[in-house]
Image (cartoon, rainbow, N blue to C red):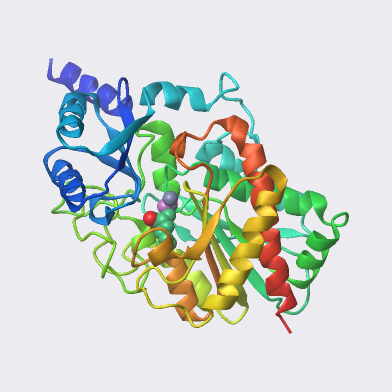
Length: 416
Ligand code: DDK
Ligand code: ZN
Ligand code: ZN
């Protein structure tokens, strides 16, 4: 009997997948201080999943607030909305339907695909095969392991050279649920390899510079979103004394750490961690960039959603020393992006364009001396949010390529 019970528990643990039947995503528009207070109070009393901004502490007046509400709290939220005069709309009627609808091509393919959201296992073997098939243009190196022991493999793109070349560093998948981000890093690697030699800009970029690509930074979290909870954001680190798992890797870098727009509550989605670089994934990336700080000229980090191109600072309202150049390049990159499908991006410093957020990788890299430091928030603006349909992977990646190439061209122009 005990044995049976044990087997039962193990079986439940192995198949414990969070489902979202009947759950909704609302967009609230707080226009009064009372609205803001109401949202924050609600977040204290019930379990809400903040999509935008990513935690209740970041809610302010006159911004859009997208929240995912579990079915059991729907009545409560409707009542609250009726009693206040806050404007609101339902973005997603049934979250489980949206999750299921994200893969619009039927069953998941056996093989890796650039127009699907690949699992970590598929991405891992894709990394291995990319690195072994194009040895004149690509190599790989492990920069450390994740909390759960997965190897963080960095791809280095660029024509082989006997001397050290200046480089651009790009990571994707800092946040687990932002699936379009790793899809973009994979797309970038494919495009770089397949257009080298035919596209003059890509050829000159990879002749003169190296581009380091980390396809998934938060691998443990990404794997968890495929296997257990699609809406997970943080790492998967555990600490004795807390029942809550993980920290926000984009609040864990040593840049005004945990001072504003981050939470010291281990259960929060914007938990800054127990100390700067307490998350091994952040530490591994920071160590690599520190070691190569003299060659790394640009740092790009890819997130979703909101269609923003952000640059320092987010931990302070002060403008970066290079503000006007960073803004000019961001605006150029945004208009290059828009030229393809008309997708509109907003650019500006993080603190005023999205929200104050200390401990971000972009601010950290910038203060280390990496001047061209940018955070992308890819499609969309909330219709699907994190559940961007696979049919949008291709257009999103195509347009984002134009922005990344625009920034790279500017970096290249300013090398010597
Ligand atoms: O980490 C965040 O909350 C978003 C991406 Se989901 C970016 C915030 C601005 C850049 C942080 N330095
Ligand atoms: Zn993110
Ligand atoms: Zn985001």
